[in-house]
Amino acid sequence: MSHPIYPLEPEQLRLKKLRTEGQDVTARVIDTFYSAIDIKALRFQLDSKVDLKTGSHVIFSVPNEPFTLSRTYSVVEYDLQAQALTIAVKLDPQSRGGSAFMWS
Image (cartoon, rainbow, N blue to C red):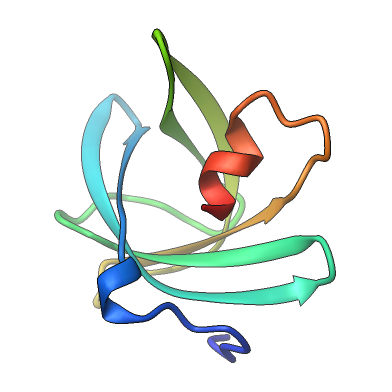
């Protein structure tokens, strides 16, 4: 599935925190590409194996001072062997933190 149009440079890699099935996981962005003009796909390398399937939901922590928001995204692809998952995020022009953070 990985057909990067605008890949991240190594210094742009960001860590994100996600929660699934009661398990906290650190995820590092390893690839991005646009699946439509306003939809960015993000591929993450997870720091541990989790039991996910395409269509599962993961919850990302989104910093929004002075709070931390929780935003849920559907898994587009998950590779258990590589411990990598892909989500797609539509950029909302009136984003209150979720999609703008994920796009950053």
